[in-house]
Image (cartoon, one colour):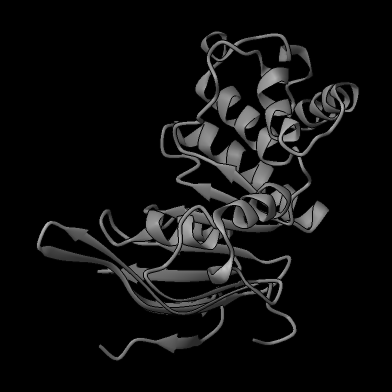
Length: 240
């Protein structure tokens, strides 16, 4: 692994056993992501995008291969060890928002900090700051049902930043939003990347989202079909 790699996958496979049948979702995935980069993982439904995201974000483990984060081989870690790293290093933004309906905006944003043992007063202060940073200062007491889809996604973004992670992973972050609202969400992510230096990884089937990226990884049938920097020549392309 190069010194500039934040994340590296080496020959990663994901195989599910369905009775007597093996379903191979990912095969021979090798990639590197530099710190502070903006990467889009692109591909049609069923290409393995979400599975790859879960492995990159340490939500899942590969059947074969190795996953490195900051030089550490996380493939050998226990679930508790992965959970600790995940809580500190990785923030997740989900297409369905995954907000708790009985909690207000501030409480939803504060949840990840509970698991890191942060005192309540500091949790509330940080949650207020994050909600203000995504333009929801006046909505901190509202529950998800009282907010628009775009507002709920901005809460989800604020929640992903609760523990100041180095990596923010977004799974179809504009999938449930109209185009105008989706563009505003992408602008928030771009700002996190440019102003705060966050590493952003977006999984999407929408090629328009890729226009925001510095690097595009195309998946097809569980394999990397191409991996290139935007506006530059293709650095690697599958010959299969």
